[in-house]
Image (cartoon, rainbow over all chains, first blue to last red; front, top):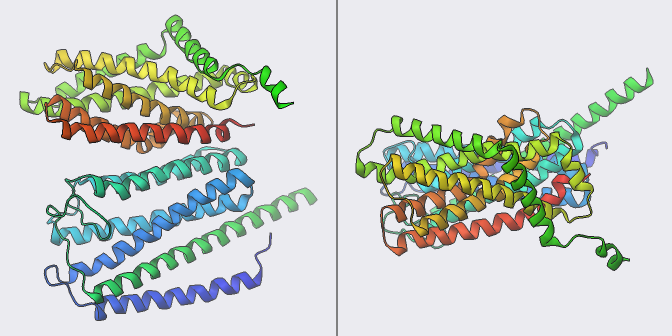
Length: 240
Length: 232
C-alpha cells in the first residue's frame, strides 16, 4: 500500500507543530513556572518525567488496542501499530526512568532505590523489552504477529501494576501527583502545586503525549516503507 | 446443527481432568520433570545457604525470598519441558485436532503444571525447614504456596505455549515469563515474609487478597488469549 501524499503532508505539519510545542513547553518549564520553594530547579524535571510517562502510558495502551484489533481483523497494519507503539513507548519510559533518577539524586540522595514504584517500572520496561525479544525469536511471520499481539496485551498487566502500586503500598517514597494515596506522610519530595506549576504540567503532558503519537506515526510509516521495499524485492525476483 | 456438534464434544471438566491426569501419569512413569525440578531446587537451596551465611534473625527474613526465587526458577525449568515435550512428540497437534475446547486444553495443562510446581514448593518448604531451621509448615503458608504456584502456572503455561515455537526457546522462556509473573512473586513473597515472621493479620491479608486477584485476572486473560496462540 502506497502511503498517500496527503497523509505525509499531515504528518509533516504535525511534526512541525510538535517541535514548536516542545520548544514552547521548554520555555514554559524554564521561564514561566517558578522554581519550587524547597526543591528548586530539580523540580523542573518533573514536567518531563510525568509528560513522558503519560506518553508511554498512551502508547502501551495503544499496543493493547492494536493487539485486540489484530486478533479480530488479522490486518497487518494493527501489527505495525503494536510494534511501533511499543518501540517508541520503550524510549519514552526510558526517559521517564532517567529523568526520575536525575531528580532523585538531589532529593532522595540516591540515583536508584528499590522502592515499589521504581521496581515495578523497571519490570515494566523489561517486559516490553521481552516483547521485542519474542518478535525476534519467531520466524513464521503470521505466528510472530499473533504472538506479539497476545504478549502485547499480557504485558499491559505490568503497566497496571505500576500505576496501582503506589496507591496500595503504604511504604513507597514515590510522590503521587494525582489521585488517592495511602502514604501522604512518608513521601519524600512531594510539593504543593501553584497554578503556574499546574498549567505548565498540563501543557507538557499534552506536548509529550502528542510527540509520542507523532514519533509512533513516523515509525509506522517507516515500517510501511520496509514492507514496500520487501514487496518490490519479491516482485523483482519473480520477474527475473 | 450446533446441538449436534456439541454431542460429540467431551464435557469441559472431563477434558481438563483427563489432560492433567495424562500429564501426571506420564510423569509418574517417566519421572523426567519433577526429578530434575527437585534436584535443581535442592541445589539452589544449597547455593543460597552457602552464599548467604546468615544469622538467625536474617535467615527468618530471607527464607521466603529463597523459597520463591527457587520455585520460580525450578518452575520455569519444568514449564519449558512440559510444553516442548508435547510439541516435539507431535502430541500437541493431536490435542488440537481433538474435538475439545481449547481453553479446556489450557486449563488441563495448567493443572498439571500446578501439581508439579506445588510439589516442588512443598519439597522446598521441607528442605528450608531443615536447612534454615525455621518451621515453614504453617497452614497459611501452604495456602500462599498453592496460590502463588497457581498464578505461576497460569502465566507460565500461557507464555511457554508461545515460546515453544521460538528459536532458542530455553533462553526466551525465562525472559518472557519472569517479568509477567513478577506481580505473583512479589505478593507471594511479601505475604510469606509476614506469615513466617509472625506479623499480624493486617500485614499478610492484603497481599493474599492481591495474590488471589492477580491469579483470577491472569487465568481469565489466559482463557481469552490461549485460543489465539494455538490456532492453525
